[in-house]
Amino acid sequence: MMKLILSLTLIWMLSSTDGTLQCYRTIDEQSNKVSNQEIRCELNEYCSATAQERYGFQSGPSGKYWINGCSSTCVLGSQTESMNSGSGNLFKMVHCCSKSLCNGQDLPYPYVPKENGLQCIACEDYDSPVCNKTVNCVGVQDRCFSGYHTDGPFTKNVFGCISRNLCEAVHPLGFKFDNGTECCEGSFCNSAWTVKLNVFFLLLGLILPIAC
Image (cartoon, rainbow, N blue to C red; front, side, top):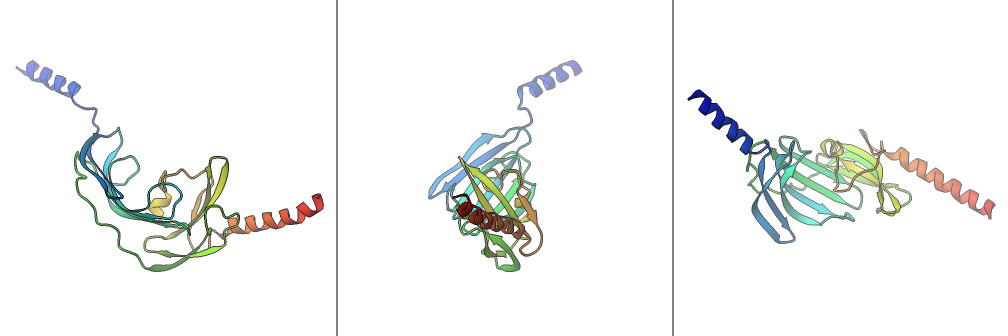
């Protein structure tokens, strides 16, 4: 009898999943909502539920929408993530859990936060060669950041306010920051990059007339 039980247990283990979670997939994007689809996650992924407000970015949708599914970067529990790049704003409420189908809820959208006193350098838009705009950080945005990302053959600057948890994420904005992106504490702590850019373009302006 014991051998039979062990055999049945082994067969069940081999026929079962590899330990991955099953999660709900829910997308509400511009009133196009697909609810309660069940998907199988990859290894090392959790179930996640996200309520997001996103405006002004060049890539990805804008507005308010839910995204529920699987995530390999989220932290168990609930947290708010936020950033302001001068031309783009992102506010996210994220809940991650470790049991199958634990993400069936639609989270409330983040409240509109108040200014927290931190100020950072940002770009007027993604095509600005020099970034000297001042932005007031809000809510959980407790860091300044500076960096760049490639868009085809172009390299574009990205500066502004960001929350610590979002700064530490692998792909914080839906596009990958190139190596060199940095987060720092204190108002205008990301302004060194701007000074370097200003000096570069000043020197370029002096050199070109001589070269011609």
